[in-house]
Length: 86
Image 1 (cartoon, helix red, strand yellow):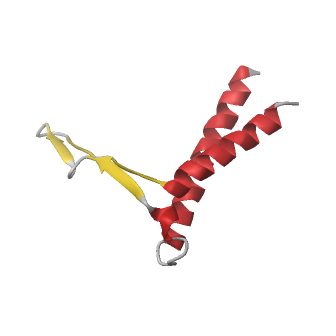
Image 2 (tube, helix red, strand yellow):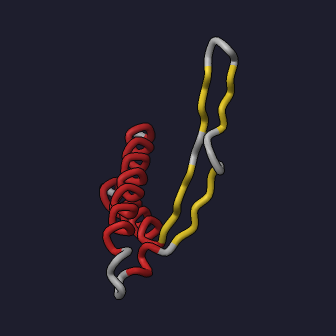
Image 3 (cartoon, one colour):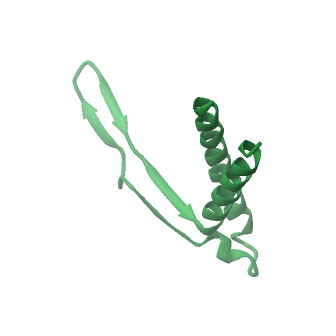
């Protein structure tokens, strides 16, 4: 049962991140709702390239956390608690 709840919470967290990012992009141009797109990003400046002559591997990551992402992740996890309560 714990494995099911882990996968449910992982799915709900990822869904909250995606929906929150979408809402942040949509509301960025609306003056009354632009606060939802306020956030901070962090990650690598550019791609990190590991060249092994035979194989070239490129690494890079950038994460942007916005207000709407935090709100939607919290809402999705609350939904998960309501669903798993029964």
